[in-house]
Image (cartoon, rainbow, N blue to C red; front, side, top):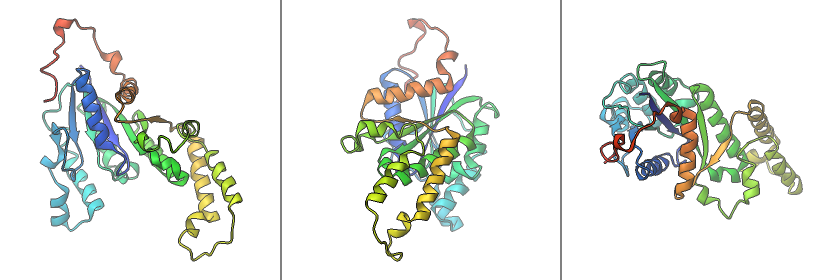
Length: 288
């Protein structure tokens, strides 16, 4: 039987571990088994104890102390040291969904080959033959600052290109923007395009005033910064690769909807064989 898994990734604070917890809870409620892998060597508190933990191999705290590295350098060292051993660690099983919870340092999978190398080991190019998809989370509050939103979207697109596996891009923490962003306006961010910046330009013309170059906000509001944002937005629009789903982890239907997209991405349903009620084990395969 084929193995199936998802890489949960995104910037720090995007709600990756919270999403993993909600996903595990949803799977358990629906009597579907999973295998939870923590790949963050700095993580400490878990609602669900990982079935496999990178900290059993190496911890960020020890690396920073012994190698005199900072947090980012330490994380890169941890992955470069542990990556050859992660795929061979037991017990990676034939369970329904292997959930790999990644740290929030996006450079690990956007512009250095650490995570892409791990993905090759985990997928059909390696020995485990796991059908993988990536769930890339971006905090929904980014839509309030469109420059930040397009920067986050660019990092999602970069991860898509680097990893070369199916992606499900997600706007997380939707409960934080309910009531503050109109639904019609929010829908425009689900399919990002360069026209989203035109509204900001129109507002900027209406509020145009003399700006002191020494002011801290003038750099982020200057013409050079606007041209950079337009170039980034146009690049994303030209590739037309990124679209988003909405996630509210407090809504069971929202979590279930995300899972259905992940099922499609990894072609889970197509690989299943029909089973009778007698063949289904509703208890032994569930995580404790």
